[in-house]
Image (cartoon, rainbow, N blue to C red; front, side):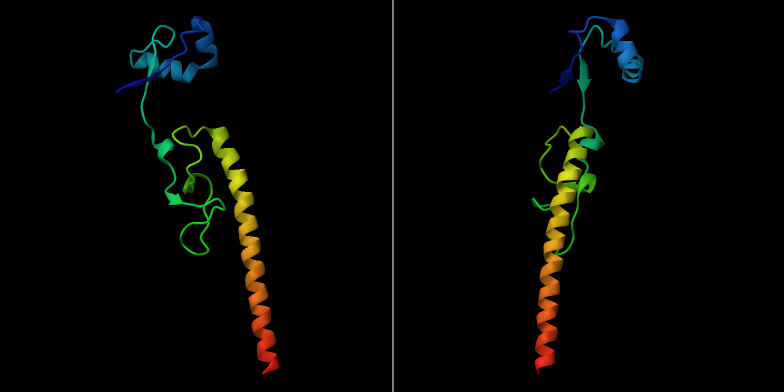
Length: 122
């Protein structure tokens, strides 16, 4: 099955050349005139970036390992990983991960303080 994208509704070759010069030239090199026919879409490596599965806090299943951005696999963007989505995802998960890490450090500091207090009392 082939999937296509189209800009046929523009119907102005000069607009396509002005706004999409690189992809237009590449398509023409491949024998595709995007002003007259749809463009076949194929999977690209960028869409399969990220393999570290994370939760809503950016934490992986390895204790203390957090991942955000193109390293992570959050499942939020599906097959459409546009730059704007990736940037927004990074900002959201960076905040969530920093909050989770801050809370973890606070818990460690609290446990350590209690441990020291217990040692002093002994």
